[in-house]
Image (cartoon, rainbow over all chains, first blue to last red):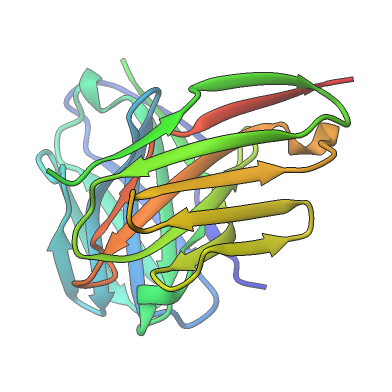
Length: 114
Length: 113
């Protein structure tokens, strides 16, 4: 079974802090994704990576950056956290030939910015 | 504009009853449509995928249908169980890359004993 592990279930940070969210997958998947999930809005893609050191902006990349130094690990970075970044963050992975493959999700990190 | 709309937003039914969830989309060119189940506090898990040529697909008590002409899909749950309480999310992909997908906002289903 694919396992996607997010480092924290709950996180509380202060405005202006630099925040790191970590995600690790154990199935050697090429693709990894970061989403945020807000009530009534559905999941929105922040960043996508299709290979080590490769990344693409998603629909809402402003205020975020990512890092993929190893295939199994994909990090989301909030450069200077703001209150409007309070949300549920979900990481996912899928195989390289991914159009017909499901994404496998972690259980999310609920981030609160005070 | 590519959009995915789900209805109803929320639904409460009694255990043992059937229900149908709807998904309408305007994504073009269409590649596939997937239904995910998201339990409270967990990440979404794929239930089924529908491609352009498929009309119906079943996964146990879950049956998904797709009408590519009207751009509508439904998820029918038969003989509901308490464990079916979850959010059900419709996700539509278009031909491009693995990142070109849109998530609906989901239907929150509650099963009452």
